[in-house]
Length: 175
Image 1 (cartoon, rainbow, N blue to C red):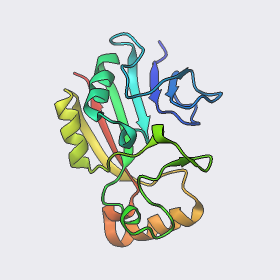
Image 2 (cartoon, rainbow, N blue to C red; image 1 turned 180 degrees about the vertical axis):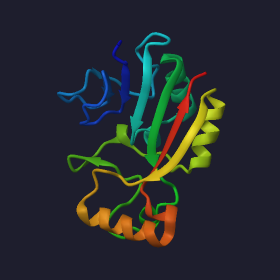
Image 3 (cartoon, rainbow, N blue to C red; image 1 turned 90 degrees about the vertical axis):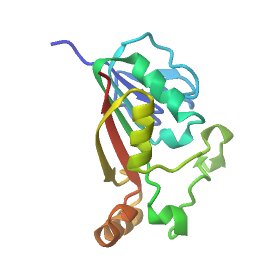
């Protein structure tokens, strides 16, 4: 059985995927690349394209999705995990989270700015515009949050549904 090729765009410190792109060089990154540019791979190179906590950083999300579609094989899957617009803590700064003021190593990085928040409906519209068939959406917790934030998220989601989830996940397919 042939191994699937998986592109992880904006991988951060993750090791998921066969090819990992990020704007910040790290040991796990296979290629330093700005996702606002054309992806450095040929058409149909990947079975899966995965991007976690990247979509909100993109200057032109539709151009990015068109690039993902280009590098996906027919029947390939795209999975985008991004900030959930209704997440209550982005709007009321309950525990020091302020959407848009992204820092890495305690320093504000202009190349890492947040541009938008998304709902499943926004992601569906982006997928449709890019020619990707949306197949599933769901809300999720940000897995790397502190224990304090995770507890608050679980309580908020219990009482307020989608307003307690920090991420929205969209999965689509290239036909």
